[in-house]
Length: 306
Image (cartoon, rainbow, N blue to C red; front, side, top):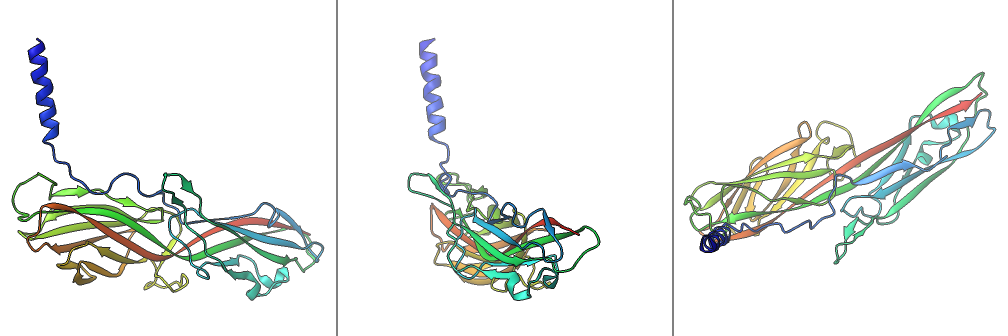
């Protein structure tokens, strides 16, 4: 009985020892999540109730927190108030908008794995006072929009073999779903699937998906509306290889390709072909970077007492 148990244990160790150790993305390298900036009104700014006939002045205060893992550069965040006619509240259009004058640093992990929270800012809009004398109560909705430049960093890997058509599962598996790790952001690399594209080329099927709330726009246009600007993401992939890389509908390069793609119903599939030049056998880290403008909003009802 003892001999049988020893043989069984030895066989188990041999079995697990011979399994493929397909390396790639190691552990939770990012904080993760689907948020970029979070936006809300501070308590009583605006208040639930205000008064007509210039009887009481109030302010609007918008708090913004960087809950994702991408720094927001100085000046790229713009807060805009809407929902009410500025004239009715003694304001002008210029006083309904403000831009950031400081960097909003990202949420991140330190070397010990502890989470360091991202920056917070408060934008104050003073001087609101309803001018007209009303015969009764009227409800208004004040809305705040935050438009800012943001991005996503993702890590995945490829399995490189000298002959990709041979069935060889040592080191790594050619035809496989690759591990993916994303930084915290509203658009993510949802999946990466690798398959052989011939003896010396691999196919990568990459799916991008908007997983967070808000609206996505083409980078650098301050969330300008229009069919050519909406749901546009700049896609950049770096495979770390020195041979030809081509991605459908984007471009061709040497190990690196970038270009704009449009998300349809919140997602986009991209197919890339990487020549390997007969190199192998190893696992190669792949970096994917996404860039875009993102808009999030919050609103609150305010009753003007007549």
